Image (cartoon, rainbow, N blue to C red; front, top):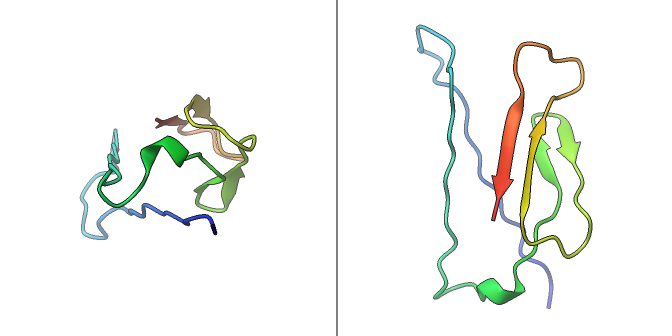
Length: 79
């Protein structure tokens, strides 16, 4: 069976008057459509940066500083 590619996209509103202090993206797979016992994580992309996970990873959490960025870090939690 071929892997399912799954993406969650978001961006700041162009009309926002201030930058976001915290952004939380939550999404849940529907267990009626996906066998959750077979789900594993793949590469996580943040802009042009990529975090590559070992094959078979099912849970992952880290704080990631994108290369060349000093004004923020990204907290990643995938379960």
